[in-house]
Length: 396
Ligand code: PMP
Image (cartoon, rainbow, N blue to C red; front, side, top):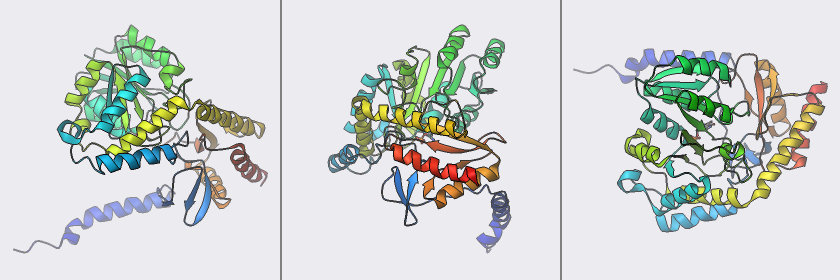
């Protein structure tokens, strides 16, 4: 017997999806992507137009650095383009091993394990360490991947108000879970502020909990030598499970977990996003290694980024744009209404400047913002160009 035509079978689903897309479009919430011609950087080419970008997480300007490009080319010549297997089968090549050793020495932590992406690292760590009888205490502004991981683990998920230590302490004090894991972004990705890591650690010690930190936006940027949030606060503890990505300040892609060796040994055996995925290409690991070496050796880059952050904040404060308490490369300007944020972002684009408008549900209602992210590749003139256009808009 003939089956119904596939398009007819799928019609209710397709209609529902189409209706949802149309509603998003009406609300102005449809996400758009752009095609970038050429390399990531402070100046990018989109639709044949050269734009000044404040949009990337390439905080040290390493994504197009000659050392990373050449490391990638050399690695491809000897290790090939693809790994063809997961790490535990035959996908773990010299470049991955060398990168883990470099990170181990740099982070001064006994256990290091590479993951293909930060999203997968977060899923892997949390689902491996927590099960039904455990509890996860998560900051309400944590990255989506941490929330997804907590739900997937089936542990009890308790979310505390952003950086609210009293609320976290109440939750910890009442918990009877087998294992308690406090999870926080070290640098919050939409606000740019830091988690109160020493205080979080103290609470973990008091209530026999563990602390998982996602330092995607701090690694390479924070700390005198770029070792991230742990160096910034000068802390070290076997209770800390640290995760950082290699696709932001390190200029390449991938992520790593650092912590006690028992933890990384256990993750290698049990973290499903580690076990059941193809290892990322060796040239990517080689580029990340060149990025990590530059983070370690080139302090001037980080110093310049911090000078740019300072200059940007001063310029905004002079003009009374509302900033958040952030000393990191993520510098949101709070606008408030969704339409105003979108309007300013569009006006900036017309003037050749890319700054994304971030709206609910990504950020709380009434706090739509321009998310300016700064890079060591920006110079004073770039910041002044952005400020000049903002100033003109303010005057309208
Ligand atoms: N954690 C945070 C805080 C992030 O901002 C991101 C990426 N935006 C990730 C994790 C995921 O990292 P990756 O892009 O390597 O998957």
